[in-house]
Image (cartoon, rainbow, N blue to C red; front, side, top):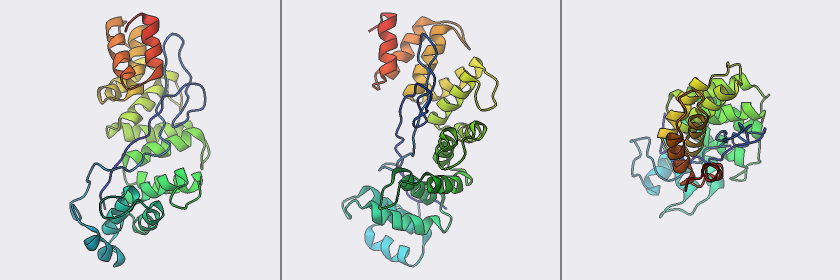
Length: 265
């Protein structure tokens, strides 16, 4: 079952060894490599993923939700999550309706409830264990953003035991559905030879390119790095500059630095 779903991924470049949303991952010398790290992809106004309640107002959603209609509950929760011309933003009320829908198996609601636990919003405690539980339920139903976030929790050992192989498994499932951030992170795992993967810059290049072509800033930067170093592909400084510039235009500090080092503006 699905409902109105709006998602804005909170993305951060990574460097270092912590993987913060996913992270601060280790950089290669000469050019930066990193990963994306949403510690929870945030539902946000934008994309309608169901038709049953498309355009429905509060007067339609509330009685249906109160009668136990799970997709109406999730759609009503969406309204409270973001607020609109009918209701004031109220994360506590959103959490209440997401929970009712999630308990009936609505994947989007499970994912969003996990997000609220992840962030400690809606009067819910910040609880990685609960976040992991709800992300897993949604991920097992095939929801890509839940798969990605579950992979991140495995990567960091938050709420569940750290397990890089499981992280790779969930990143791959999300990446194969076309989620750019997951493609970048899977590429990074190949780049570094983590999570039971043999190091392969060729595979890293493949996944970085898929992410980069979708506009993911970290994927663009990492793709540029491989072009700059001639790893996993031919060395091509022109292509490196092109992708660094695209990433830098999104405010990626590491790409800006790389361009400065290359003497390109």
